[in-house]
Length: 318
Length: 318
Image (cartoon, rainbow over all chains, first blue to last red; front, side, top):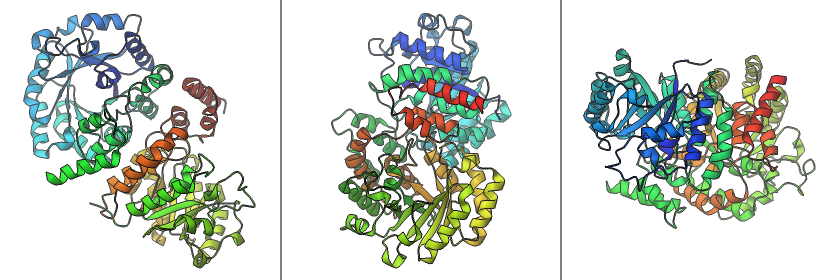
């Protein structure tokens, strides 16, 4: 019933931290990493690895920087078979600030980029691969890229020292046939070089989980999820649904349900994510959620029809 | 880009009414039917057509009975191109309580049944077809039926005077490949007789919309949805997502967004539906949501890990 090659990566703290500048309490983060370990998740994403000279530790919490000392402290008392990953944004870290793999808890460095920045991403990938890390590239906002540009990028990525390249539905706008098209296109370039295809969905149209299933059906073996779907704006593919779907006996759903009950139901009353209509509207219009995120900070947060009229009028002006 | 044959049926009041025994205020119901008409939805389901001698009007609101006088009153001032439907439960209405089509606002009678009750459903279908109505059969809980039973039922239904037969994912447990299997199976028996396939999803695994897309991809032309996904337990495929996906220029999203803003956001604070974990748990276990609905009425409503352990222990005892 299950495909043993599939690797589930949880990015609860990394993507969820985009809601609150990674200002999570240590107790919360420890409980998450413990639950993920107990659940048998393959890869736990700790956060971003950014430079504290480029981004301010006054503004951002620990998991924007992923310092080795902080990682070791938070993992105390947790036994795990999981690998650990961190995400690198281009331009937010200097090469000499990244330790060698032998001096790091991190196993996998994931480089996020837009298709136009593939060359920069490959430089960074080569650097971290040389330092001993496994690597992935996550091509963001691929729903707004033209096929020749995607193909040119994939042809270059196929020559890089990579474990996986992700389809990232940044705006939560893709439908199943588009997921099929993209996963097949990625496979064509990457599989001959032994590089896996990954999928990272967003939930603006309630398709985060459904499209992840479609990516898996077409051969994606790296799939991202977050506990209770936490993540910026509409959030992500919910981990609890994905684990139940995959049916691999190594996964255990109970620790995830426990931590949702204890940590996420209370948290959801303080910070918001999920199927909230302004995010649905940016999703159906294939736009970044920033206009919706701005709206949610105003007294008009629920004026969804006006918001829709405004965005579609802007489309007509384009 | 769009398939003109697809008929969108909204069952907001009918399925949403399962949450509150159809105790909606007239003003609310009028606003819903007005918005659906303005949005260009093909079929508006008014409610159930049950007997007030079998079910008590003291317990249930108007839309459990769909009396002609009530329908006419609520539709005053609404201009519409939509057809109207009502759902019939076997044993909850007597034949002589159903008026002839020429004396009714209702165009389509939808008979709901389990696969074991197909013979009773066909008797009722023949009766209402003789009275001049269009007809459908909605086979509930098909995720728990065996293929030979489904095929025997479909072979009989193929000989009945029907416009469509629905795949109903009552427990919200189906995945895309199962939807493909069922829609293809229904098509094999029904399409040669000119009977369409329909799909009615539930949202326990956040697949109400995604699976509806999959049913459409395989040829289902009747699809059910509700505004903001309202419906018993986890609710249904959200109409606003479906209309945006379908891209038929006859549809207009704005009236639906307006009515969500004015009516559904306030209502959601009074009654609950949607991705609530006990419903997710009954969904992944392919069970009726009744245990989860009972749990939500207790002080342990959020004890999801215990609830999961209880249901899976019952599975082990089976």
